[in-house]
Image (cartoon, rainbow, N blue to C red):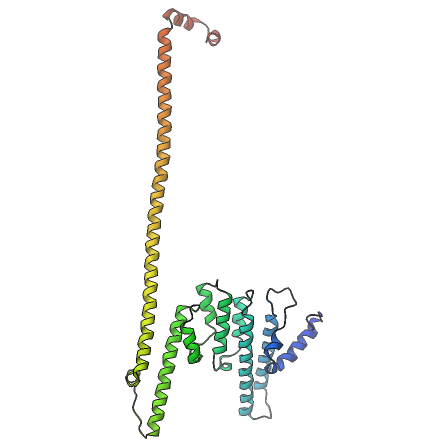
Length: 317
C-alpha cells in the first residue's frame, strides 16, 4: 500500500526494515507484490531483494551481539530461520521465473543472496532453475551454465537427480555432474545399508576403496553405472558426429563459394572480351568504309580539297 500510495521513501525504507526483521514469518502470497514502478517485471523483485538483505543484516547482528540466550540455542534458531527463508525464496523464484521479463542477473542475485548453509537440499532451487529455462528458451549455452552455477548438484535428492539427468534444457556438463552425484549417493546408500546389516549380524566387512565397493554392490547398481557410462559415451559420440557434419557443411560451403567466384569472374571476363570484340569490329568496318569512299572520289577532287582552306573544308564536308 505504501508503494501504491507513493509514501515518502524514508518511511518506505523503515517499513521494509521492519518486514525484513520478520521475514521468516512471511508466506509466498505475501511476497507476490505487484510492481507499481516503471519496471518491466510483473512482481517487484527488487523489493523482495531488499527485504532479504534486511533479514540477513538482522541475523548477522543477532549472531555477533551478546545475548542472554545460550549460544547453541541462538545458533539453532538462526539456522532454522535461514532454512525457512531459503525455502520461501526458492518458492518465490519458482513463481517469478515464469515472467519472461525477469533478467538472469536478478534471478542469480536473489538465489545467491543466502549463504550455502541455509540450504540443505537444492531441490527447490532446481525447480526454480528449470522453470526459468522453460520460460526463457532463447538463452545461450553460456547463460544456461551461468544459471546452473547457483545450484549444487550434490545437494539434490535422488528424485531430482533422476529428473535432471533426463532434462534436455540443462547443459551437458551439468547433466554429467548430476549423474555422477546420483551414482555416489546410491553407492553411499548401499554402503550404509550393508554396514547396518553387518552391525546387526556382528560382522564388519572391510571396504578399503571404491573398487571393492563396486565389487561388493548388487548387480543392479553395476548395471545402472554401466548404463550411465554408456549414455555419456553416446552423448559424446553424437557431439563428435555433429561436429564432423558441421565441418563437412563448412567445406561444402567454401567450395560453393569458390565456384560462384569463378563463375562471376568468367562472366566479367566474357563481358569485357565481347565488348572489345565489338569495338574492334566497329573500328575495322569504319576503316573499310573510309577506304571505299576514298577509292570512289576522283584524285583531282581530293587534291583540290587538300588545297582548299581549312574553314572551307568543313563546309564542303
